Every structure is written in C-alpha cells, then in structure tokens.
Length: 132
Image 1: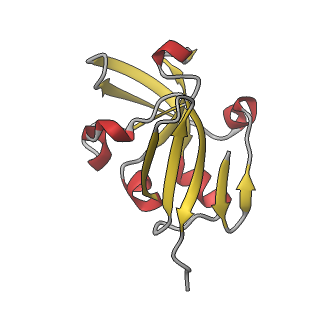
Image 2: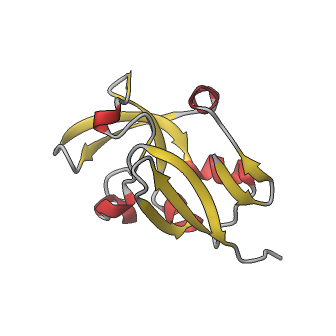
C-alpha cells in the first residue's frame, strides 16, 4: 500500500504489483555479497501513479516494523526498485521477500544499507511540500 499522495491511497496486492510494468537489474547484493538479479517495479512509477512529488518524505515499513524514511526524490534518484523476484523466482521471506527495496550499483542509496528495506509491508507519505 502507498498512501498520502494526491491520488490518495494506492493499495496494491502482491499480485497487482506483479502486473505493473517491471524492469530487471543485476547488482552486487550487499548483504550476501554476490551478484543477483532482481525484477520489480520502479519506485518512480509508483510515486507517479500515487501523485507523490519528489519533495515528499516517504516512510517505508517492513513486516518487522523497521522504518526507513527519505524523500521520494532520493528514492527515485537512486532508481529504487520494489523487487518482487530474485534470480527469476519470487523472493522468500527469509531472503527479505516477498517485496524488498533494492538499488542499482553506484547510485546514492546503494551504499546506504538502512535504505534496503526488506519484507516491505507499506509506504506512506509523512510530509509533503505543496507543488506549484
């Protein structure tokens, strides 16, 4: 679920998320320290769908209540991806699934391990700067 944008709450099940356009990236996964390929939905596409401006602060919440908060612009500048597959398979819970945030190598948040929120349950806008 993504809430707080100009489009209100955008609630997507895993199956609905999986029907959105995806992209695939191969990265050096920093926790297992090996190359892995992830497929998922670009956070920029989700934020656009929900009407969330770059200046909005977005709180990502994991199933274990872990929070990571940053601006929508920081997530999109790092090409954040809501990954739903790892190496062509659904991501198991014990590997941070079924949805986790990943970043391509070399992007600003790729080296910020706190930003790699695992087992994502929701995202919400905590503050938004009016546009226009």
